[in-house]
Image (cartoon, rainbow over all chains, first blue to last red):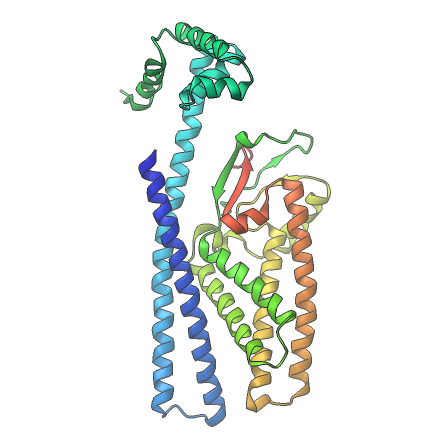
Length: 169
Length: 198
């Protein structure tokens, strides 16, 4: 889970930087272009070295903008793909969990507790989140483990890990 | 072929809990930067910056540069930012508005059809203001009355459009329960589960 998250953070920063440079270059290009047009209207000639330099600068800036835009689109496409696949995985995982919980016949309270256990929340925190005694949470956990036919926390995880890693035959 | 999400749900349904909502990345940083840049430029030039000052001119150049950037991005940009994701369609815009009035929730990942028309209107007006503003400073048109009048007329039109734009954002956000302002800030639209098909 950490690796793609970190990757997307780097990409997000990169995308922002690209966008900022694009805007800066584009604004400068427009400024140069306006100056060229003003000079043209004024004396109608393109023979000045100053004019040519400005035109070349405008062209270079414009070309740079297009180049950076293509790069930005690539970064954004990567981010969107990552976003979508994460969402699909999350959605499917939630469904898988739901199917198992139903199959095991967990009560609503047990479902709640089991989900928090899967999220890595410790018993004391679960108790305070649910406003119950730690003893109650421990009892609910024991009930969940026995309904699921596992020894404890680690084995409960492995039920879902196995599902995730299973290769369809 | 329209690929953006258009879904309908009955207006009577309960608001889904936050857990049932998915946040979808729709606006890339360039779209957001241009949006807030233009908003800031308009706000500055309309209020605190003195007319006929060089600061007013500079901010005008920046605004035009931002809009020009967005127009290029509309051709080669990301999916939701491209013109093809929000073609100008007055019939669809009217249908969207009448739907909003009747409380029908239609979620669009790009601009909604009414918002699309507003976007094109704002861009055209801003370009018009930039061109007339530029002409006012150019020697060839110096002192020509109609240029100045056009610039001021466009400004009035721009202010009316901005007011309508803000009202549209508020109404659409309330009816569809998708916070459009957030979309322009962090780029994400939060859509209720099962409410959208991309």
